[in-house]
Image (cartoon, rainbow, N blue to C red; front, side, top):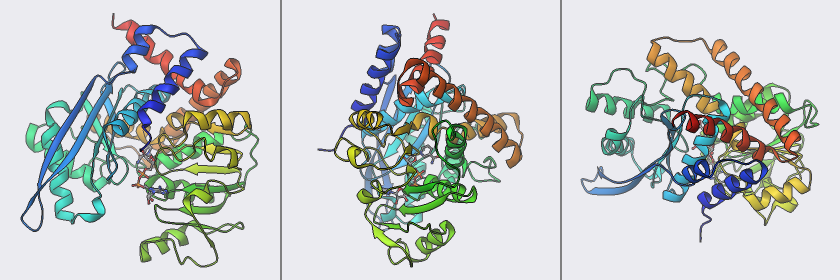
Amino acid sequence: MRANPFENALVQLARAARVKKFSPELLARLARPEREINVAIPVRMDNGNARIFDGYRVQHSNLRGPYKGGIRYHPDTDINEVRALAFWMTLKTAVANIPFGGGKGGVAVDPKTLSKGELERLSRAFVRALAPVLGARADIPAPDVNTTPEIMNWMEDEYEKITGDKTGATFTGKPLGSGGSEGRGAATGLGGFFVFDALREILGVRKGASVAVQGIGNVGAHAARIFEEHGYRVVALSDSKSGIYNEDGVFVSEVIAHKKKYGTLSGFPNAHTVSNEKLLMLPVDVLIPAALENQITKKNARTVKAKIILELANGPTTPEADDILFKRGIHVVPDILANAGGVTVSYFEWVQNLKREHWTEDSVFRKLRAMLAREARAIFARSRALKTDLRRAAFVVALERIEKSLRNKK
Ligand code: NAD
């Protein structure tokens, strides 16, 4: 049976609550999403037949502000996955200290099997099903796995047609020129680099160290490129089908060009082929999971050789694996900190839409770096003070902020 990521999320919550005492009311409220919506989405396919897709939106908590979180298109997406992702968004927006709560959406579909027209009709139909609960001050979706700026544009357009709302601030991650922010595409990967860079010396990693990246989608490809630009040796990359490894390093732009041309990493010259499982075991300084949940588990955590795991994917490490890695002295920079760059720039986009402003890329990146570096250092200091790992420390910081909002609401 497929592992349930929401169970892992609840174990993480319980563990953080053993490090510091929080009110039973707070813990009870976070253990259950505030609202869950299941929708059946009818779509007219190109052959004239109708197909019904399962869609989900989980609104986990709005204690600190409107629900915020991406929409995923993936054949394995189910309510447990979306629930876990929504929960992590609540914690992540608190870690980033931006005025949002947490939500997430998903559609069980393999978008690679749809034509562009079918994909657009599905995306618009999903918004029609959810429109009553969305809104710039209620619930603000964004891209996630297999969803793109173009899809966000269709969704925002459909939402505007239904509601007449012209703020353009209900979906973030829109294209530039259609209300998108400079820097949103690279934001998650770049934010991960800023977090890493703020902690690098204290975690004992030298500049120019070796890096392996699992998953070269939006997040992983930008991260690989950014680490390379800062002088790091990117030695391994993978997609859902295969991976490549060269201990002397590869040129990231060449790997991405190869993938674009042939649709696969196999056949990339001057590199060994490596499976996704083997990629996680490579002798590298920094391992970056940037694909899906439950990749580092109790089965393989003992064989991980990296010094640091920078979680750009959501939920890639299970709680059992966390314990094994902590005992082995391997630092895990948790998802709710490491990949918070995406939602932080989504917040900047939302502010720009509401204020009718357009900020330069330089100003977006400067603000992003300052916010993430501050939070990363504060979380590291808490982990030392509480004698615990970075995940528990990040949860403690987030829970304190959410608890404050809960108290203010009474
Ligand atoms: P994406 O669809 O652009 O890319 C996903 C990549 O993962 C693809 O290259 C795919 O081939 C690969 N992949 C899928 N299954 C795999 C497997 N089993 N092993 C190795 N690779 C596999 O998605 P994305 O937006 O880059 O998201 C990646 C991760 O980052 C997800 O966990 C997502 O929730 C998280 N995340 C994304 C954002 C964002 O802004 N897009 C923000 C925060 C976190």
